[in-house]
Length: 158
Image: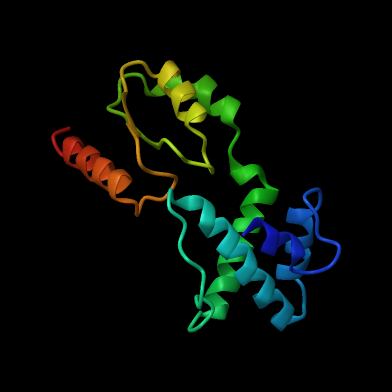
């Protein structure tokens, strides 16, 4: 997937990946934008789960307008550090100390590494921390989904 991302067009490299794909996806040439969006989304999708999807024949039946919109949102977030200041969140986590909190983390999450969940748990020692051993980032993975449902059920009693 990473190779496809880097070789989609000449001049794309690790140092300019986000800026080049932003130029392509937000560009005025709609066909170029949609093709770049599909490549971007397939790469990003390959990082979300422990077992990435098989992309063979996945381009058939794609909603290219949806793919373009999704890539635009993702790239906009990345360009803006996902609108999150991790240090600020950790510094203000104590504001939640008397609230019921369940932190659910996939052991193989490549988007939000387990280190970040561990650091949050250190700031919220009363929280429940669930490390799902066979999951990445996606809430659609069985272990993550199960832990989120369990947490939701637990919150019903509050």
